[in-house]
Figure (cartoon, one colour):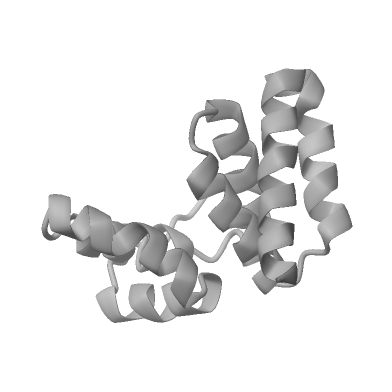
Length: 130
């Protein structure tokens, strides 16, 4: 199996972040973190969106499904989960598909965590409909 060299492209990271997250979602997280831990948000955007997300083997849809699953399994990260539900819609996933991800997770992560995911989806959908 051949692997491509890892990239860390700061500019590509910020460009992709603007595609994935609306301004409100970015402003809900990044400025507060930057104030508390200067430079950390730049590292996150560069390493994650300018690095991991730039790898070609998975598309944005597959990455979003993985993000929804991982955040739901973690639990206690509902603000990030709401943001990723919004991102899922931005990249073209339907609400039905997003909801089905959480339903599918129930036997794997537990019903309470799946329900928390569904509540996060409902919050994101409600905010988008306003």
